[in-house]
Length: 61
Image 1 (tube, rainbow, N blue to C red):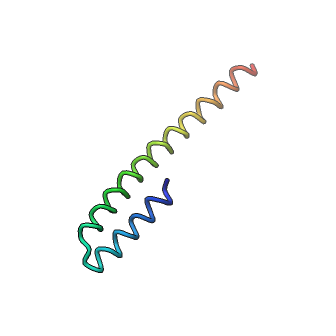
Image 2 (tube, rainbow, N blue to C red):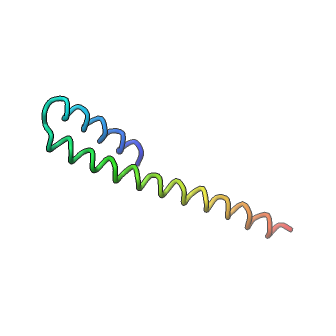
């Protein structure tokens, strides 16, 4: 997910430098959405990992 966000950000920068403002705006919007999705999933996985470790410790004791 983060890989695609970076790719779209690079496309946006190149398109903006070449004057393709519509393409630049579109790819920048896609990059923002993908980055937010990445952040949400990363936080979710960290929380689930922490809860999973806590649940495993409780089950062992």
